[in-house]
Image (cartoon, rainbow, N blue to C red):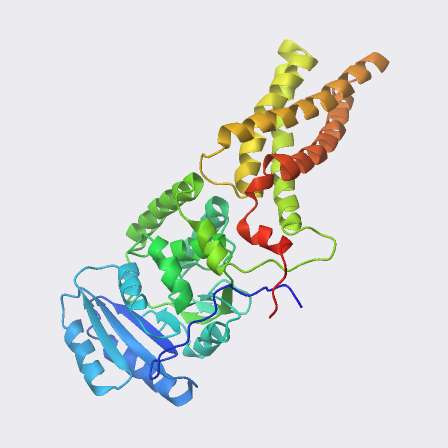
Length: 419
């Protein structure tokens, strides 16, 4: 008897005759490169891929003869299919094909085949086995080998730093055109993905992470295509707009990630003697606490010269307590939306009163005993705040946000399932 750490929804079996893998090649005006690309990909899969496969050419409203080339390839190669879309957009093409495919694993790669095909089986194998839910090729992971100009290298690394800072993304490479997803995961995840262009990949990966899905990364050998038709400036601006939109959507809680996590998210591994989710909550709470303490000390130091130590402590602690409750509500305990926000702040103020008692009491006792220097006074306040922080965490976990633990954590306290 052991606790399950696999998704609650197993991979759906494919119908008789359906491929295990469907590789989508999205194209726009690629009449020259399309045929050699598909022939090379088809030869590689036919020679060494151990499962039934399909290659689907997704034509994004091309205005040249790309559609004719795609139809000819589909007519001559048995494992090749073609789809023509009336509108442009890589995300639109992938979503269209992936949501209609009968394959168990869905992948895509760019038509220039910049990524070495030797990474394809390592990419999809963890999805076929059920070990992972999505897989991405990474040009930034250790072990990857990349040939590209300094400008593209700088843009790629800067973009991923922005993702980490704004959306707390943990995957290393959002835009490498070499990704795969399990079909049963795509069925539930893709309806939430709004972007139809280049930001599609990023949005899908961020939502997958927030839903508790496992993303497998494969270091790749990648050679930049000097004839790429991607407009870097337009793509960068679209990505920044996408980041702003997604940040807003996650902040307001309008995306049903909780239900997706309940359906597909992986349960955390149990650790003897440690309540479910405690380690992650402690780390996030500590990060919020450090930021709150620094803000408190800065505000206290600014106010003390004008209004004295007690009032400075009261105002600084009150302001940072409100901000601390809001930050912990969202980041530490995963509560989204506005429901219960005022009640949480009221309870947070009650917790604040405990912190006020500890810090104000420490100040009062200190000034009874001596006339301290400012540095010593700040040192005492740091110690008092550390104690207050520990008490605040216990009260928030056991009282303020007790009923708002994510569903996957609550399930860890129920009867374990067998595997």
